[in-house]
Image 1 (cartoon, rainbow, N blue to C red):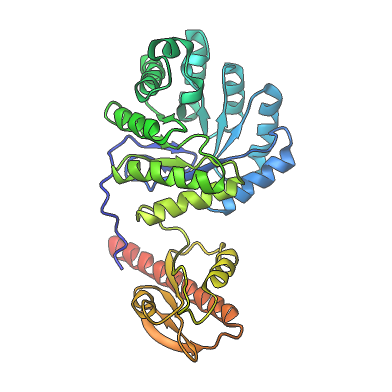
Image 2 (tube, rainbow, N blue to C red):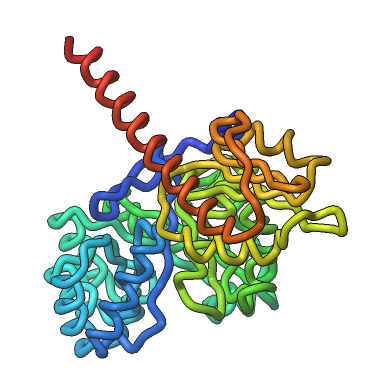
Length: 376
């Protein structure tokens, strides 16, 4: 199966968020944001770690006060994933978290106040190698833009973003990324397309306030899918009224569907019908829960009958095809052995884990061979 995406990505300037490259030729990173009370350090640390364990490259934490900044210091000391601090209005909070080891500042320069305050933040960021994220939302446009446009529009979002960009340009600070988010899909897509033509910095994609798990997932997949197909986007956040871990899962599924990122299992499963020889839906629910810990990129096909099963299974790393009297398991595209319906999920899980381990060993051997050739 072809694993290369046909998408030609927009060229952008690369920045570093901790040890995660964003932009340039770096993989599109996936991030989420905590929804705990930041001053509750144990709860926030636990959620940051859960988000990271789900595969997130970057985690954002809201820091609305100096007390929260002190809590951020304790959080930073207990987690290893790169952290972005979400800050509004008070430049002193930005200076404090910069001192405490933040990896990126989400702060709009135009909202900080006088030039001397902005300069102070930028000087600190420059000194510590901290990038800035300009984040523009349709729901919080300035009053001047609201009067000018009458309502949120893609053009208003871009004008707001470029206003903040101009401030960073004035202070000769190019290490930033930008988002222009709206909850209305077409507005967000139009804004990102307009902005992509006007700056070289990486773009942080998102459909803001997208909704609950189901509706927000669909809305995000449609909006981000259009942009990613255009080659636009360097890091993504799926904004759901749900557990942040779900945001990470959805983000990776979107990227995997476009072959822009490989992380964990890509399941191919039939919706099931009366031809099925086992409970496809129940099997998939169980496998998805049990195999969430696997990070090895691999395809697993679960097909209930012999009509489409063999064809899909031959293209997968592991495939299960329903058949009578026994189901057939494929490994590496070849028929391997048969299994009855009794306790076959436990057996299939074991086969998948063994295949994942073999693929990891092969990947490690290939990398070692490449290093050997380049150093010989």
